[in-house]
Image (cartoon, rainbow, N blue to C red):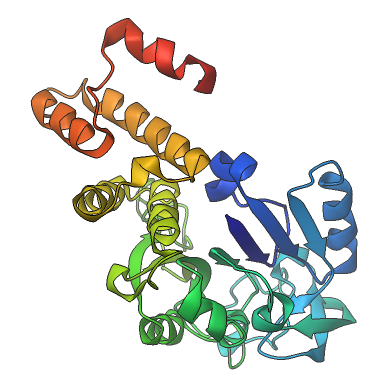
Length: 310
């Protein structure tokens, strides 16, 4: 799977770490110091390519605003919320700027296929998506993007604008990576749910009925299953696999590494569910047998099969 990461500060996103060995990563980081750190960090990983480019909707030269908190550096001016609400004002303070080169995803990957897209570009997300329209319409099946619900960046796209754009490309919202903890306004608060929801990550998948026909249809189905599993949507992944069993012999495909990952991930989830007294064990075994045409491994057999994976 080819994964494009726009705004790759800190390296591989945690949601992708479980598929690191079966993926190729293209990390884009325009900030020079962070780019050099990433190059050094992944110098021995042949499946990771780091580019000192910003991604946008066209080839361009842009000004990158370096802020006090460098992870908040942006290609946009600051929005009204920072000043009006004094939201992390010191962290957003500009301390430097650099000129950076920008390119679009469609131009950069004109001869290759992108499967997943991750965006964390401080208000520039819609610009990046506008430069990936061919890939979104033909190849990309999973998108994870930082989204905001306030005016964080001047003319920066809100969640609504990004969501509307992806809807127009036949994607659907899978979930928000939000645990109920927003930006706290005082020290007296519920420890589990507090504050204002200012920003979070949102996750979308391609609607199945809009997947292209063979020869890539099965590959894209499996890619969506993987994307669902790494983003906490096991139920959606299982529903897709059950649908696949009606029309395709996916176990006989050439995508062995993906199937191995899917099988392991589901096996561990099923085993955990089996300890829940409210779960129908027979139902789990039946679903497993329907998908993989075999009985779910029992007791010690489970660890014999999956021991090398744990």
